[in-house]
Length: 238
Image 1: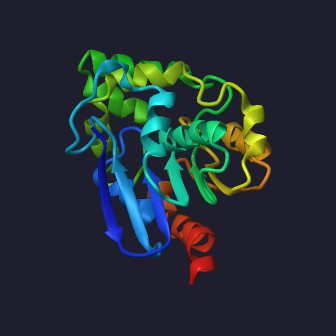
Image 2: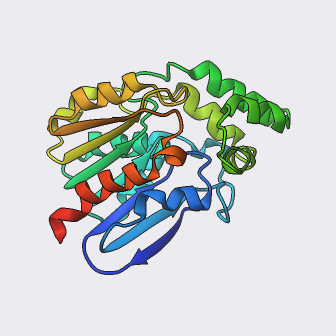
């Protein structure tokens, strides 16, 4: 069900796990500029990947899928960040370097579960306009929010599932992770509260937190994100 696309060649190998509803172009953003091989996943129900069974969307399931891919470093965005956290809570030595971009939940259910459930309800009723409104307003973003709304219209079961799930029920397990961890957060993102990124920074012993002053950094701060990622994942290999 998961499609793997490889870009580049050689070492290092970096796994990129996108967020829920990421478009094909958005999923590739974290891989841009990195040296070596970038393996970008297309999750079920996204782009050209087939829809999964309704019960697919659990963090243990996603962690199992990710754990089958051999890569020493990984980037997870939103849902991908939660899935990576779930994986290393069980396999603390799995990666050398990890980037968690815009985590939405860690050891507790989402604080914004009501917003995610409202999005799921809009999908269930086929109300694309309502879903688009819930995603917010971003002047000058072009088709970004329209494309996100289109992608999420396939993902009602996933939205219902992630609204209240807990990626790492026992956060003390993350103290065993020896990997270097970069956490990138957004200051004003309603779907990815800064407090979750701060919790992750405290949970991982070798972590660094970077906060971008935007609600939609993947649109407004791509240059800064690329610099953070290449500096953390690329420079030490050059």
